[in-house]
Amino acid sequence: MQRSISHQKPVISLFYIVLFVLYDSLGTIYPFLPPMLTLLYVLFARALDNDDTLSVFVVVLCLVVFEANYGYMLLSAVVYFYVLYKFIMPQITKNSNCLVCIRALTAILVYLGYFLFLTLLSNIFLLPQPNINYYIIYYIVIEFFLIGLL
Image (cartoon, rainbow, N blue to C red; front, top):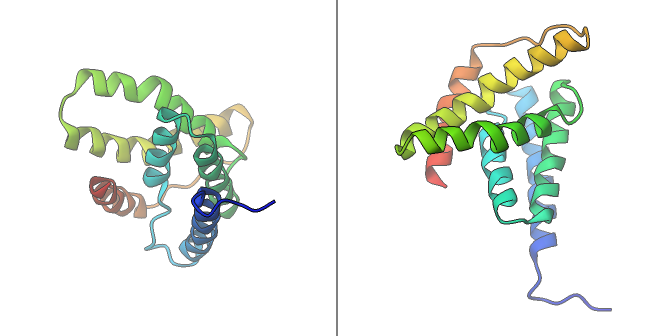
């Protein structure tokens, strides 16, 4: 059976996965490269809005690679992103009309909220506390500008 030339989505998704794995691997070596969590959250939310299971799978796979590189719990980012998408962000968008404010809050909630979520999980499962560094402020600023381009 021959694949249709017009159906390129799986090939492009595979390219994005390979590109993200390479970028994330470099990001663990060079801390000035942001881990692109806010960008992954925006892609995750758009895929859920469009009911695109392939894109959700690609983002989940990228999040698993991120968690493996940084030593976080398996699928903790996926659970946090879903809670953020389903419960927190609808309340923020309902109460605010400022698009710039929503983007800034998204970047802040993705990084600081994920750190607090990991702290909660470490307290529940009696694991060591995750460390927070001052690069997180740099990551929030850089990714705020990146999601502003989307």
